[in-house]
Amino acid sequence: MIRTPLKTGALLAALAVPLAPLSAAEVNESVCGASPGGLWSLVGAGLDAALKAEAPGSVMTYQTSSGGLANVVQVKNGACAFGMANDGDLAFAKAGTEPFKAPVEGLQAIAVLYDWAPVWWIARADVAEEYGLESLADIAQKKPPLRIVFNRKGLLTSAITESTLEALGVTIADVEEWGGSVQFQASGEQTDLMINGRADLLANTLFEGHRSFAEMTAATPLKLLSVPDDAAAAVIEKYSLKPWTISAEANPGGDEAVKTVTTSIILFADASMDEETAYTVTKAMLDNPDKMAAVSAAMQRFTPEGMKDQSVIEFHPGALRAYREAGLM
Image 1 (cartoon, rainbow, N blue to C red):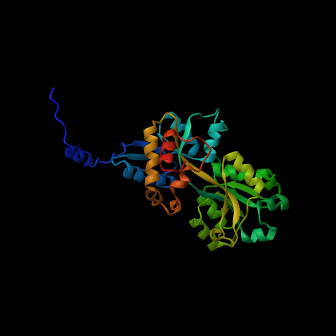
Image 2: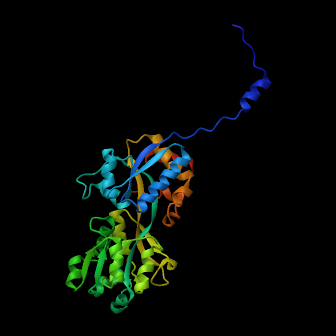
Image 3: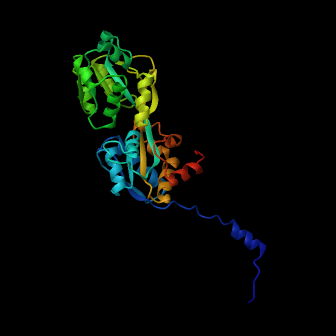
């Protein structure tokens, strides 16, 4: 065989030709969220936009659902590749706490989508002044006949708020015995009850600057009640929550900061998901946080650094690879 030597100049020229950057493989999957038109649907749209920017031709289809608890089942059954759930939902699934009959294995985190919707305890200022209420501990001590409205029964938010009072030794039966009442209503109905003077204390998870604050303050002055440290610690442990302080600037009823707790919304998948898919979806959000933040004013705090801030369930290996490459782990 005759070998023809490659001249040095030609070799260098060949090596100098730039290689086209490798594009991420297309991903065509679905994510189970909650109701259509809510924030989770907007977050789903942001996820789709980020994925398209990262891997052109990709599609992330948002699928409506009844929420995080249902999404655990949907992901395990293969109805959706990804799901959104509260940290407490995933903690209950992992432990096999009701409504789950046994521990759910193989749930793995992709990213924290947001963790800035804290629990607000909003009282009518006149009622708070009448009974001397500054924190939830005052309810336990002074036993006022409050008309309390929690979010809908069966939602994590209502479970957290009811458990917070229970951590202080206050049950629904106690409130009723003191001459008060407890209702479970959707967010819009909660606001209406406060505006119409048919509720004294509202408890719900809300974003800072939520429009309901302006609606309620237009009808009546408000007073935020703080969550005592021991009650906060109890629900943080039970529901895998985080401590939170509502800033003085965000307080619609005063000029002081108020302690409470906050929930996290986590994007998760089953452990059977292939590593490359989990990696691409995670990297899409890391590389395109503007796509996630643009879907709503409520999402403007979204940052890559916050995506890894959870310890409820282990991270998927594909997500871990993306975080390590980004220098975040």
